[in-house]
Length: 88
Image (cartoon, rainbow, N blue to C red; front, side, top):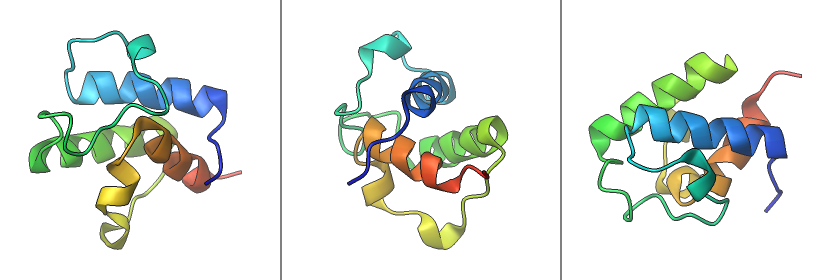
């Protein structure tokens, strides 16, 4: 597993909190924060809202075939996924 850049991780934490309307400060989320199965807000609608927010924020496109539990397992896994999709 690669490690996401610190700036991507920070931005992903902000987007996660806003998109899922979490009642926490983004700094409370770490790369190890478990998302899938631990955040009730991350239901099917939450996933759609989160992916749309990530696409808008980072200018990326997430294909339907890329949706899987693994990218939503932790905040770090999601940030790593985003890092791999940001155009250089």
